[in-house]
Length: 70
Image (cartoon, rainbow, N blue to C red; front, side):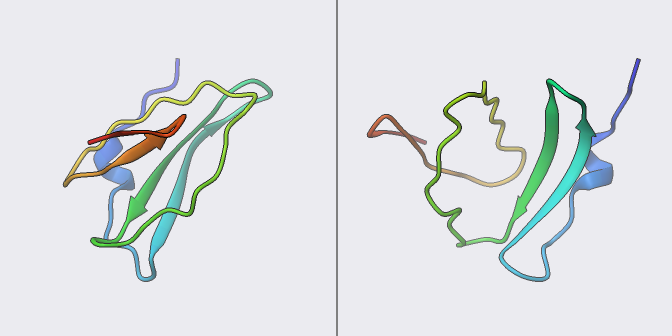
């Protein structure tokens, strides 16, 4: 069993976005994106993946299939 403490991976990015890898195997990739306040992650797709999102601090808007969710 792998145990991760998310707070160990949080920090204020020096640039716009800082990616911190938690775990990677043949079937799973888990990471935390630290996004600076006011920054926007460029639009992209995850066509062959299941994506779990959790905003830990602050607010975010996510657009999926042309639907915006706060």
